[in-house]
Length: 446
Image 1 (tube, rainbow, N blue to C red):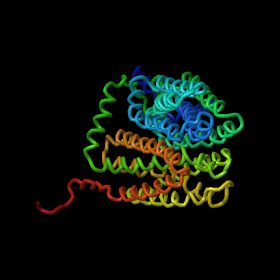
Image 2 (cartoon, rainbow, N blue to C red):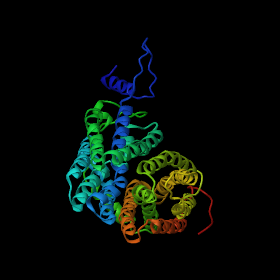
Image 3 (cartoon, helix red, strand yellow):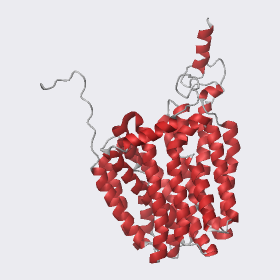
Image 4 (cartoon, rainbow, N blue to C red):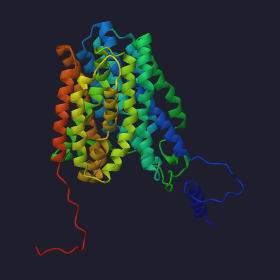
């Protein structure tokens, strides 16, 4: 047997679908890809701790320092905007420097921002620590992180792994929202900030020791695929990211997709995640109860996203988006009437309904990007995601200003409902791309 054949045999053993004789062994081998996936899952959960805290800090910071809700909302908006604007470049950073290095630096950056906030005395420091540092760090661990891990380490089960890693964010919210709310209520906001910083630092050793940038680093094939050599660090990826944006910005569908997704971010991360807890607290609901309701949204978020993906495979993505935004808008118009000191059935219904619709917009939006932009669709979606976070950032800031001016959040809910109605109309006017006629099909004479 030649050396080439031996090498091929070794590589074939690394394939998880290879059928190898048992040879009397019953030991179960776990492919390294699943270990990497678990580390990624835990890392995303740790990152979710930072996304859980800003909405819980508005009232405590306002009470202690006298900062307006607009000032606090501006810091949250900087965080959200940088999260979105960093995301399109995160994949380029991972291609250039490796997944492990980028994620370790990102986790350390957000931990530094959270720790430093314990000693802040001015609102501009909040904007630096929570806005700049946490925004850049969490943006480097956005969708590009899970997408890069999935694409490199898995050929089989990519859909399953993508769903699991998407669920990690909601799982982290379910864990940290009630925990941080209890800490803020019982011990103040500083211990809560330290808690989420420690959550990030605890993950760092696992990432450094167990994460690998590419299967070839461990001498393995990706799960369900053939062995491939590790590619050289990619140069020019950031330039391509900008070039794709310039090309897409010349087309109408890009602005419609970016506009609808900006409204999606405004009505979810910017509105509900940031202002639901302080709004409920305005009506006498304990912070822990309001945070628990927000955490429950994460549970139904998982169900709604999976079901939306199933629907996207079977129905027109434009119509699905229109329905999602219309229903979301109607629910927001009713929310001011549901606010009360205690949790009651209509509020529970809203939480379940809103959770199902939370990121149900993602599968049809991604499908439309794929339909419109083909090979560049992933990068285009990265920029559309950036618009999502910019929309979230604007409402995180303006929602706080509105609360300062009007004394309640009612105007914010009504305005967001109207914006969702606008998004529904925008989705319906996105043009359909005609599929090319099969070659050799009969046609009329030109």
